[in-house]
Length: 304
Image (cartoon, rainbow, N blue to C red; front, top):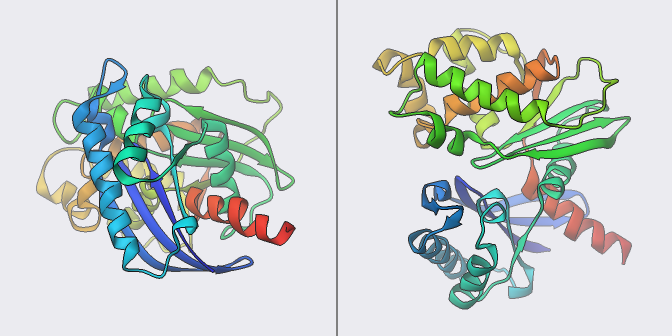
C-alpha cells in the first residue's frame, strides 16, 4: 500500500510518501518546506499571510501527489502546535479545505506525544525513558515505563518561538541563552509529572534533535552509535557560542535552515535533560509521522 502523510508544524511542513505492508515501511518521496509559521502569529491568531503560505504549500504538495501513485483517500494531513495553539484554528482549517481541497486533522499535544512515542519505538528499543520531540512551537514529552506511556504533556515552547521571544539577532547571547533556559525551566516545573521518577534516558525524535546529533562531530571523534550524551550536547552549546564563522560553520554546512533555531532547541533539550536527570539521548530515526502511519493506518488494517 502507498500513502502520503503531511505534517503541518510550526517550523516546517513536511510531505512523506510511504510504501507499507504491516510494520515494514519504505519512504518513497519526501519534501520539506521551512514555513516558520510562528512568524505569522499576531495577537494569538495566524495572519492572512500565514494562512496563504499554508494553503499555497499544501496546494503545491497536492499537485506533486497527482504525479505519484497515491490515491486521494490515501492522503492524510495533520497539524500540530502551529495551528493547534492559535485562536483562529478553525479559520485556518476551513481555508485549507477551500483552497487545497483537503481536510486537516488538528491533533492535541497529548496525542502528538503519544504518536511520537509510537513512531520512535519502531527504531529504538527502550523499555523506560522520556520521549522528547522539540518542535517549532511546542515540545512534546512522554514518560514511558515497561513499554507503556505513564505520563505525557506538551510544553508550549519550541525552538522557533523560543527564538522569537528571546533572541534579537541570530546566535543567542549568554543573556538570551539564560532567558530561554529560564523560560523552559518555568514550563517544566509546571508539569504534573509523577514524583517517584528516578533518572531517565531520553528518546529523542524530530528534526531539532536529529540535527543536534549530526553536529556532534564538531567535538572530534565521538562515535557512539545512535547516542548523544548530555556531555556532548553541552560541549556543542559551548562551541556554538557566538557569530564568528569558525563557531557556526558546522551549522551552516549541515543544517543551514536551522541556523537560528538549533541553539535554542539545544538549550531546550539540555534543560529537559537536567529536569529528568538524563545522561544520554537515544536518537530515533522515526517520529510522529511514522507513529501516525503505524497507529492510524497499519494498525487499523491489521484489526479489520
